[in-house]
Length: 352
Ligand code: ATP
Image 1 (cartoon, helix red, strand yellow):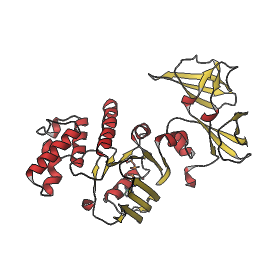
Image 2: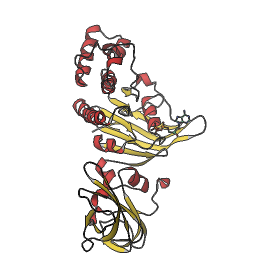
Image 3: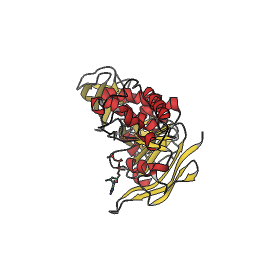
């Protein structure tokens, strides 16, 4: 697969002096689904705007197909953006909204007609051409916005929090549909979201962003299973994070016990932080557990129970279990060695 977009040492300082992006290096390959994932204010939209050409970096370069486009006008870039509020024209019907870009380019009427028909078919809005925008649901408006972008046959589609206005059910459907559209067309999608579940479900690759820096990039599985620092471990999914120390290779100490673990590449004696995911913990009898905890609370969440428990050192544990337990009960916690993820101590975002 070839690289289609590259950001090299991109820095963005706004006029008021605020540095929104510090040193962003990103490579985007063609035909993949990417997410820019981070909390509010982390710089996701700033990156998207720089790629789209609505904003220029203070330092660094943007390459598209190997060409330097850092200062190229947005309208000349082979990409389209779907905005959070869809930015549809409310006084035009669906057809005119989708046709707008092609009409502006003075394309032939029949060509426009066919392109609009194809784009509406792609987003499953056949037969909606004459509807007014106000007569559409949020999900349908979202699809019109995507059709309006697809009609230009962009090489890259940028989507800025474009599912955030939808309710949960519809959002899940659209996640699936977007992914299907992307696969079918084989164009590159770059999707901005603060929702980690959404990014995990949809992406080939995720860039996790915090305070203007990429914290980690990789496949959803890599990022979930091997978070490189505290920030990523806490931001992606729920985590139990405990202080510990490497005893020797394949052995780590935490909670006053030593445990076999996978190779962490960290020297014996070094301080570490240990991450254990709630769904990797099993509740068992006290004698079978590797740790001993007391159940403090239990919530039923539809497909699992979320259990909070306290160990003998007063560490709080979060456990996801398909079985219920009793509040106040003393139980054992069991986990496999490969589910213990060890990070060097203090490997916080500040060091990246
Ligand atoms: P959100 O999810 O809330 O949209 P984001 O991750 O997309 O957040 P950005 O919109 O990229 O974040 O903003 C990054 C930082 O830059 C924020 O602290 C924001 O306040 C700041 N910022 C954005 N635009 C400007 C501007 N024009 N002038 C000064 N600061 C700005």
